[in-house]
Image (cartoon, rainbow, N blue to C red; front, side):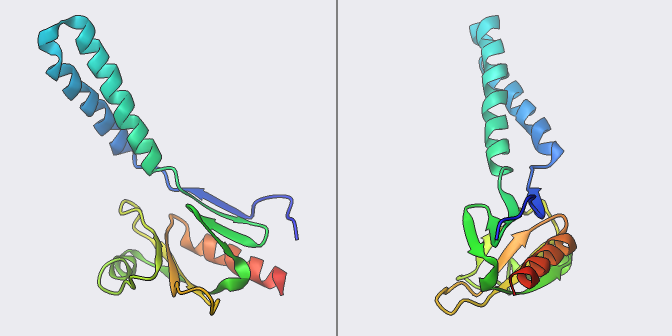
Length: 154
């Protein structure tokens, strides 16, 4: 089955404050290089800011997509047929599932700056992963998209 459009897609971007921190890292590099002159100072500002921005962007680059018959979360690709119940987790419940309720075999696409999440059971008997924990800003929308994809396959 091929769909003409992606029913769900979300990028887990880093918060805006991280970009300010990236600039402050550049300022720090500039101050370190201040005794060597103006050109090294500017190089430190530009280079430090760019390096910190690349790190922030790379950490904030994972996507959650539902394409055709697969859920793609970061580097994981799971067939929708292997997914069970999707449970929306509020901020408090999400914190519990990423700390003391967590299973070491679970797949976690975790971003601490996103307070809500979705917990999806894995029903494939060949897969040792009991569930997927997906940090998402729109857990209800993702759960509805997974349920719609499962019903479309049946």
